[in-house]
Length: 228
Image 1 (cartoon, rainbow, N blue to C red):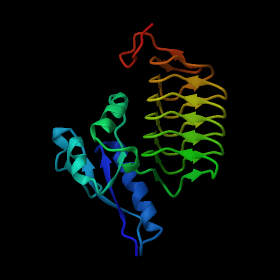
Image 2 (image 1 turned 180 degrees about the vertical axis):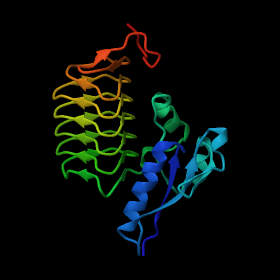
Image 3 (image 1 turned 60 degrees about the horizontal axis):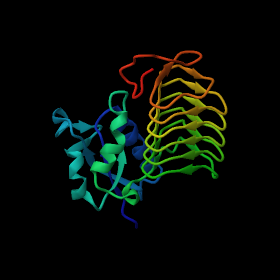
Image 4 (image 1 turned 90 degrees about the vertical axis):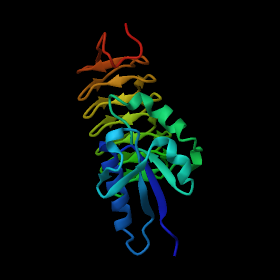
């Protein structure tokens, strides 16, 4: 019998709950031979050291990843306050791409012709449609749809309840707020933030913050990399 694959989660915040839930659901489908075992969580916040999240212990800091080389890793760090640090957090582990596991909740749907990158997570109720592409270290929360021929860049975050229609490009390390919709053929730039509940009807420039229906730039936002 094949031993379960040991998983280490990066980050003890809210996204870790979804990852733990996805792993538990995958294991429940095969209780006699569960595919995964959670080794623990790595987190740099002092207050989280020794913390338990749904029965999974915080066992150290991000830099301790090298001590767990027999494990596979998945990043759960992403919020409006932290998402820009995802590339740096992943790099700080010192691990190669091949050591990151892609986690798909059993109640998510991924088309046979879709492509998923390393270390990405697809949570319950989400749908990745035919010919869609999801990059490395992408976080897709619950009930989000990525339609046909759309591409989600590395390190991007798609919050819950988003609709990405066809032929959309979401740039590297972008953050799309919950409940947003993106109409076909739009391009969202690298590091762009789209506020919750927005409707994107045109291309959005890199590094800026947009919100509303239709989405308009929020000039002077502290979350912008580039300000008008």
